[in-house]
Length: 274
Image 1 (tube, rainbow, N blue to C red):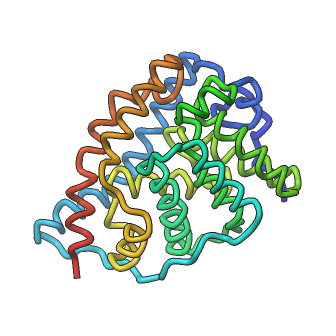
Image 2: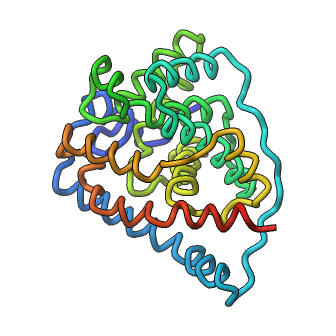
Image 3: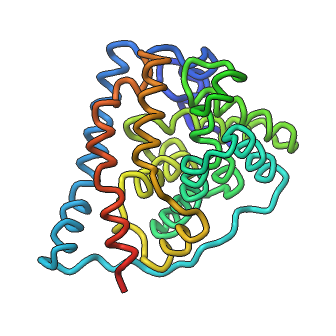
């Protein structure tokens, strides 16, 4: 397994080389690049969003999504260790924890739907999605070094995957899928694991419910319920932005209220669909 080209470039935000420096504050150029990438991602999602808005009002037919079924997390030592660490750092918190489990399942569904010609390492995906937000927890902030929450999460992922006996390239792939996750856009050039791990949190927390068949979504939310995720996300983003004023979360913080404001209503409507 080869790491994606550019992983050794410290000037590309989110790469392993960038994270090796602790996740330094963004330069002006990097901020502009992040904003430009986020705009591209928004335009890519806009047709689906418009169709959902019209379809949910009965103005156009909603796009049919295939029922694919939900597979269990990989039953491996690394995934078990990642789950244990997530629970330990969460200290009883459930919203971000459950979001992390849902992120894995949504990422896998998106990958299956895409029929992409990209190989997917399910175990790498599981570790990356379970730990993609773990660096936001106060216990992680206190115990793990890093100027960015994704760097802290990647450090935890490196530790558990090393303990599980992974090869260095798979360790690096999982770590980079975490550190690049907060970018404005993550293309397939960074691998299926990083690409779909970036798209999946938007399905969950931004309410891109049209991407998932209702029965599949019901199964996910039944296993990992959501109650107050929007409030928890806004609080976590604000705290991370205050800790690291030059971070991606600080850059994108003004957008988060707009992004998460429709999450509850959209999922409520989707889960009520036949």
